[in-house]
Amino acid sequence: MEEIKFEEAINRLEKIVQELEEGEKSLEDSLKLFEEGIKLSKFCSAKLEEAKKKIEILTKSEKAELVAKPFNLEEEVEEKNNNSDNPSSTE
Figure 1 (cartoon, rainbow, N blue to C red):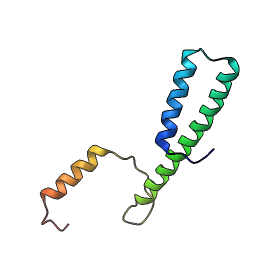
Figure 2 (figure 1 turned 30 degrees about the vertical axis):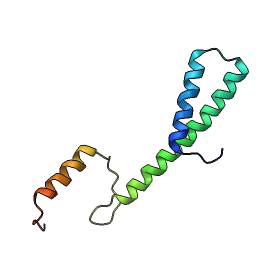
Figure 3 (figure 1 turned 30 degrees about the horizontal axis):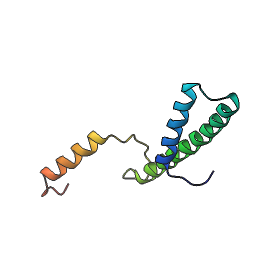
C-alpha cells in the first residue's frame, strides 16, 4: 500500500463502510472493497500504535523509567493553568 496520511486512510475507510452498508455492489466489488478496508484498517491501527509508543517514550518518570499513562486533555490543561497561576513557584 502506498504511503498515505492517516486522515486520508480513515476517510477512505469510512467511505468503504458506507458503500458496503448500502449493499448495492456486486459480490466481487464488495469483496474488493472489503479487502481494501482491511488493509486500511491495519494501516490505521499500525499508525495509532506507533503514535502510542512515541507518547509512551516521551512520558517518563523521574527515575527515567517508562511510564505508560493515558493522555487526559483536561488534566493537562488544568496542570498548565495551575503552573501559570504560580509563575514564581520553583518547586
